[in-house]
Amino acid sequence: MLSCDICGETVTSEPDMKAHLLIVHMENEIICPFCKLSGVNYDKMCFHIETAHFEQNTLERNFERINTVQYGTSDNKKDNTLQCGTEVNSSIHSGCTSNPKNSAQSLIKDSTLKHEAFYSENLSESRKFLTSKEKQSGLTEIKGSIYETTYSPPECPFCGKIEEHSEDMETHVKTKHANLLDIPLEGMDRVQCSGDLQLAQQLQQEEDRKRSEESRQEIEEFQKLQRQYGLDNSGGYKRQQLQNMEIEVNRGRMPPSEFHIRKADMMESLAIGIDDGKTKTSGIIEALHRYYQNAATDVRQVWLSSVVDHFHSSLGDKGWGCGYRNFQMLLSSLLQNDAYNDCLKGMSIPCIPKIQSMIEDAWKEGFDPQGASQLNNRLQGTKAWIGACEIYILLTSLRVKCHIVDFHKSTGPLGTHPCLFEWILNYYSSEGEGSPKVVCTSKPPIYLQHQGHSRTVIGIEEKKNRTLCLLIFDPGCPSREMQKLLKQDIEASSLKQLRKSMGNLKHKQYQIVAVEGALSPEEKVARRQASQVFTAEKIP
Image (cartoon, rainbow, N blue to C red; front, side):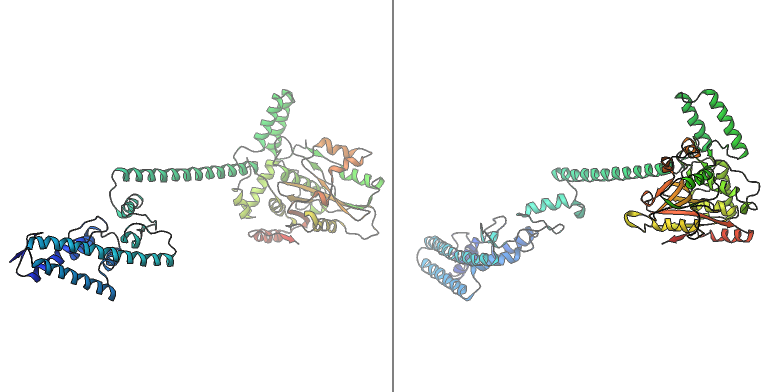
């Protein structure tokens, strides 16, 4: 029986001792590339790596490369292994023929040296092989052991981030993707997660503040539009009239006695529903006829509407009442035209609250339900603006035949509207070239609407150079200015407030309401039904 001097194990023969030394003690040179474990055989080392270092998905392949470099897989490596084995066996055989103890120690020493030489030789060859691979793949540097050369840095399976070491990757996954792993956080991990949560909450709060600010701005814009169009429940004509008169008294521009007189007149006007006439100017059409007969040498021909009174805005409707004032102008002309006596019999110029009531009555009859809905089916007690549609349904409800024409885009250079001017010229001109210079037609004035304001067209003049100029009554022009046109000798400068050339009318869109005659009761019903889907004639 032979006993191993290294571990004390006994074997029955020299060949068994040789095998024992080679297998048990020579293979102790295998070292774990991760934790430097040694002193175990090949199978145990594999088991150790697979159980202790399972997170590296390429370890088995890397370990096989290490094994290949150490022990060889090619034919040349097999020869070296056989040669090494032969040398070891020879050493064991020669050592065992003398003193077993000394022979075993000599054998181990000699074999260890030979194995180290073998390992160094193969390590050099492996590094040469990896150097060639480095050149092929474009790598810039190889450091450390064979494992470090062939080992791929771990990549995060969630976000793709690459860390140099497995410990760093483990920390990254636990801190950045703890919610996916459902792993409870501790210590610094919990601090990191808490910081991320705080950042997320700050971002959410910032987003909430942004949305709140946008919502606030939308509400303010909507309220601004409500105020602009008189739908903010701030009262109507009566309240505004009283408030503005009180301001005039406080500023010393109206005596208290006049305040009480005007308040009483207003209350009476509202009670009977008839305009008090304090903003009316009459006789302008007649004055213009005299002026064009005797002056205006640059004018070839002029067409004037039938007689019409001018109405301007008062303290009660300033800023929103232009549509109502233009209706009063148009109605003043129709009331002086015998063609409309039947449909307007016994009617007077209504005050603004009365006009609002008349439009509401037209809605109740079934006119323009869509427009009524947009204005909440209510005008009385508000400062709501009215436009061409409300003028149309009001006139139609009174059995006045009219239609809306929409000039929805510019038809000339620099945003001008020559088609609008030509349409109005055709409306008023009914006679040929031989007509007199001044033509007083029986045509009613035209309601003219654009964004934010409306006016009344009372005629059109044609210059000797064939350019056209509209004559317009503006409800924003006060009586003191309009009365300058009543003088016996009208100055040309006074007509500037009436004359509007193409260059003066450059809004994007215009609408007109033109009166054409009276309606029969049957025609009124037909037009009421047609107003369920409101449309206007578009030019061009």
